[in-house]
Amino acid sequence: MGHTTPQAPRQKQQSSQDQEGQKFDGSSSSSSSSSSSNSKKPKSVFKLSRTNTLLIAAVFSGYLFHSLILRPNNLSLRDVPVLLGVVSPPSLNPTSFVPYIIVEREQVSSTAFIITVEPFDPLHRLMGGNENKNEKEKERKNARNTNKLRDELQEAWHHGLWCVEIKQPQLQVARDYTPLPPPVGEEREEMVRGRLRFLIRKMEGGEVSSYLSKLKVGDKVELRGPHLGFDVAKRLGSLERGSSSGGKEQGRVVFLAGGTGIAPALQVARRLYGPVYEKGNGNKEEWREIEDMPATPPKMTIVWANRFREDCPDCEDLEALRKRGYLPPSPNAKHTAAGGIMPYLQDIKSHHPEHFNYACTVDTEKKFIDAKTILDAVVSTTPKPTSSSSSTTSLTKSTTNPSCPLHSSSALINVSDRQDHGSRCKCASPANGKNLLMVSGPDGFIARFAGPKAWSEGLERQGHVAGVVDELMRKGKVSKEEWMVLKL
Image (cartoon, rainbow, N blue to C red):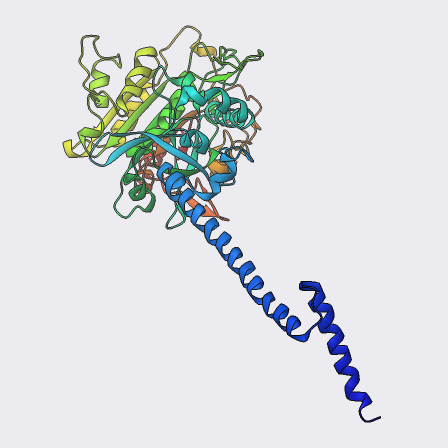
């Protein structure tokens, strides 16, 4: 009985060995079982080795794909889903940054340059940028995305004032930049392509401007927007589609621009004088110029302050314009400005000589904006007296609702430009217009002429009017009731 117990396990072990032996080589011997058991280890090692080989091959293939395809074409792994057709390229939007690519770069002075960007398409980039080869396929695949972008830009340009954020990826900081209007004669094409242009001045210690100054054509930048700014059309009156002056006085604009602050000034000029495009209603997608712009646009004068003459060649000061009766230069006058900002100003003046004026001041020439400059600018926009002028009424205190965010200076104090585009007029005569004295540029420039902005609840708001303009208003030289100050 004592031998029975140890025999049972042995028999069980033998049976197990027999079954294992039969499973591998049909042998029932213990040696065969041992041999079969040992043969399992190389097979397990072979499986592990094969897995490692596949893993190494995958990593190496990924490295080659990144090194030979992605990196030379300025692509990244996040572009792969777009290359595979899984998703469309991201479209410009106000909530997330999307990639754009620099397609042009123009150095306009020793410290300022203009970059032109357009939406980044990884597939288009991978195919070598051959626009004709893949244009139809690109339009077919990304039609919905492209239409969305065009709608966003159309709304922004028609609104007038708007900006986008440009990110510095290393520091993860972003700054607002105002797009320039498209070059003369290229408005329709630029709208279709979704191109944007920015005037940028490299500032000492400026994180984003210094970063952008090092980029070249072919490099990527990340944009977020558009962010709509102040609604100029509603404040001036008689500028919205289908509206007419109806005997009411349109507002006038005096714009003091410091340095790159000329960009929003040009946006306002574009909104006042066109061209502004919208999509046609036909089956084929087209863009047409809005035909119901006001027949007689408001008067506008831009005074642009610069440190050096190289930023504004061929630009006269306001006194020279006044002596010439605010008329355009002689047709025989020679213009040496082939690029930069001057062609924009010269073109508007040539098309609207009776309504648009511009002048410049240059620090190194000891010419600055002062109280007299502002008064001259106000006079330059004053309409000539007519027989019907006595019947026109401006939007004065008697017709302005004190709580109207569009026409009341007191209500404007707490308004932020990021919240202004949805504002509605609360006045009894909304068709009337308000004159706008606008100031844009560095913080010190704005504070000197109109007072500093005020921060409240995480937003930059207008704050009280101060500085040179406030002094002119307190002395009665500029009417508080007829002129509204906007700080950009």
